[in-house]
Image (cartoon, rainbow, N blue to C red; front, side):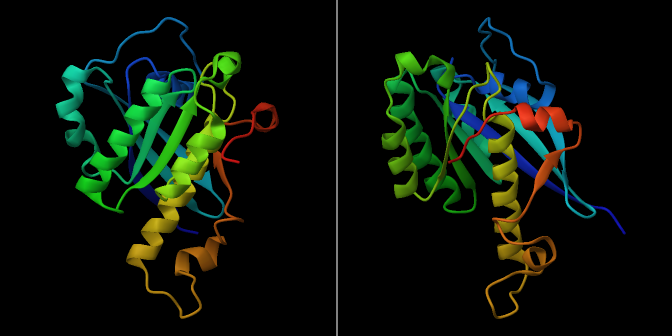
Amino acid sequence: MEETIRAFKVVLLGEGAVGKTSLMVRYTEDKFNSEHVSTVQAAFASKTLALGGAARVELAIWDTAGQERFHALGPIYYRDSQGALLVYDISDQKSFDRVKNWVKELRSMLADKVVIFIIGNKIDLARHRTVPKEEAKEYSQSIGANFCECSAKTNEGVSELFSKLAIEMLNKASEETEDTDGIGTTPFQRHYGSRRSLRIADEDETQAERKRRGKCCR
């Protein structure tokens, strides 16, 4: 069977120190640095996911700087993205409020062409939480975005959120580019299953790692 590779560009946006770089590095390299190092302009990493059958998904992930002086560079990185992870720190209300501004900017520039995920990072700091989970979840639903909470430090929920993002981008791409058969499913969905049944796994993830990882996107 001929291998199919679908490539998607993903951008991480959010205030400085919310953990955008940590999420990217944790997902692509399974590493975590407890010392904060500010991203200068942007950083890049990629990872390939294996999809059931002969399909693979390649994620090109751009991590943008959170400092205000680099804000004007944002459109350079997200203007042709298929996915956007808007990250905030659950212990920092200001970072969550800032996410709402990013949503307005993305909607203004890209309308509904980009799949948006609102990501509450640092759930390992639950005792310092200032952003209620339900508040963030309700806001995400109100704008038609997906919502996840995770911890780059403990790796809880990180793989799940990127896998779910890949599924959402695949389904959106198939809906936009393939004709339906009249019963509400695209050729992609008929071959690989519905949103609920689609399974994606990291190429380099072992079975033990799958069992050990946490839950997110509930």
